[in-house]
Image 1 (cartoon, chains in turn green, purple):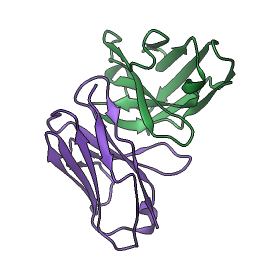
Image 2 (cartoon, chains in turn purple, red):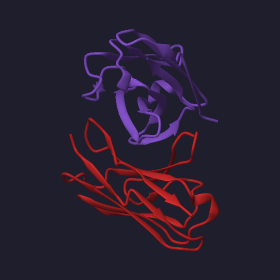
Image 3 (tube, rainbow over the protein chains, first blue to last red):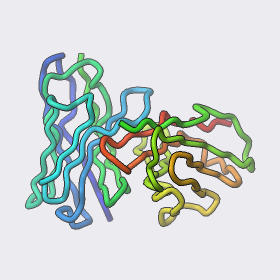
Image 4 (cartoon, chains in turn cyan, brown):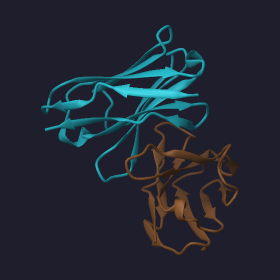
Length: 115
Length: 106
């Protein structure tokens, strides 16, 4: 069974930093592109970032480019997102999501509150 | 970035109704479009990929169509468990973009 478990969310002040993690199991992690998608309270979904299976190709949404950094450790089946220079508008549930061409599996999300 | 315009933003329907949700892309995206269902407090669930391919385990009352810029999600006979918010996603080019969502209510 595919499982994606996020952690690392919490309350942080504007300008602060946070590191989110996603532990994957139930599939060959190193074969899949992975994504982060976020959802502000009461709002829609926003794609944040993507990293290819090898880590060689990385993409960011315009709203986070230069502030967030995605990375992965295929030996540990782990995906990370470093959030720097946080703003109030970054407050959201952050989902880790598997991608085989489109997103097919999502974690349960971790809440980041910037206040 | 490609903009996805989803409509309506909300709709009221009865059990048994046929429901149609549309997504329009600001430029052609071939058939690189997916549809998701999200219930309150839960992660989204994939329903349709590549515009019209039904994800395994998803009931056949859900169907997708379209290509290029105009896409539809159809629920042929709305069931009580289908009351949720639906999103389209273009995975044609980065940055990927979602539609604004359609809330289907009783």
